[in-house]
Image 1 (cartoon, rainbow, N blue to C red):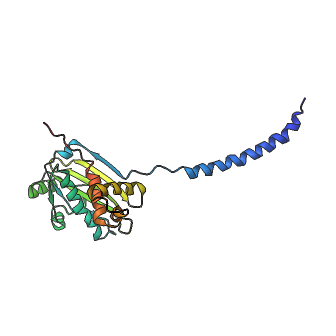
Image 2: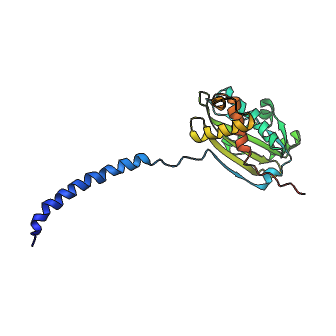
Image 3: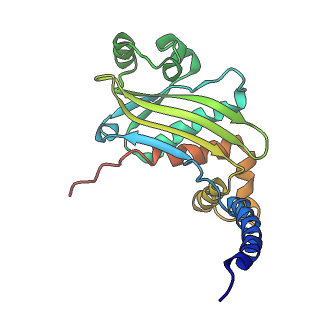
Length: 222
């Protein structure tokens, strides 16, 4: 019969060999694990977003440290909304915006009924699109963080809102940019689409089209 006391040194040795191996597994698997990335774009919308007939696009407000290069977003958003072909789109200058709506609506999170009524009567619109650029990296690759709201002049409700952070260094953004470039501009060589990551005009076009596609398009009736 085996003496149990003779097994103790062997069991202790096995235990010592198991513990270090188990300890090594934690950092090994943690290197394999990557926390899920945040989505590039989040939004909420309603059927009222597509029922507005005439929409004024206000030039985007910008955070204090963001330069004029980010103003490319204004033209790109206006163009994207027009090409969506749901609304009649009106372009507004910065001076007009400041006269009609001197407050950064998204930053202050408020807009008065009187302001909306004045805008509605002055511009003959039933909706306004306001935006704010919170982050803008003008170096290669570009990165832009922004929020856009579509507000009804009829009742002051936000009928569509989208927030995104488009970082040109991210692989998922680059994949989208490449697909967008092929659809809109075409393939002109291996590095053709990569010029988008260096061009505020092209990069904001991609962003604007990506965002407005979340507005529901009404189904045409036969």
